[in-house]
Length: 295
Image: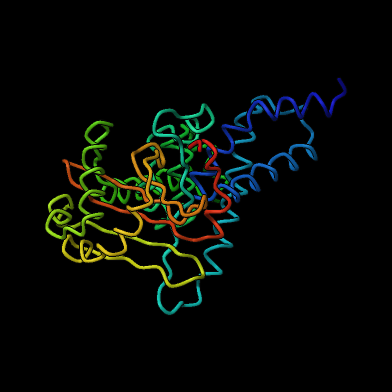
């Protein structure tokens, strides 16, 4: 085995971890793969003789790549959009009966879709400090040079991000049986067009987001009555829905003629649905690996 093959083998041992870091940073599976690939390119061009901790070195390199990608993304969004766009992170869809080992790594630390939605509201530097420190235990001394701050300032970035996350991300029910009971009640009410039954299973302050890509503007609907008012839309999706795990919690995938038309992620707390995130963008749905759901 020559030096390049040995280096590639060592890199591959870290790939799944690096993809998990990049996914939390970017909320996009394809962009996460791009960031990991850039990490490999930078490694292959570097003098590795002085790298004592390859995993730590790669984590900070991929973190820096992701930070640059987030800043570029933010600059593109500076122009106001009419109406305001709704962009949901890429969901990770697994079978309701099992989760693949790779998905387990991606979903460690309860990185639900609701958390990723909150992370989208952070500044790039705040997101990096929070993800690297709180989710991957990277010391602030190593985070500081990435964001161009002192360790104390990097700590403050993570602290601000943590407060935002704790204030916006609800404490969710983790019992699969309770999740299934609530989602089944929602689907039954939606299929029957039962408005009052829908309201009963929704938290009074429920938020429903939909992202249809370029087809039509995304939407954010708030409040149980307003969300239940979307019963006709929910009924169409519920009629062709099958249970699945969406970022580790119970959700549904709706398909028509063998093609996915939406992925719905539910956030459930205290026996009520507090968030519904619906991805209906055909282009992004086509890129999802749904073979894990079987036929």
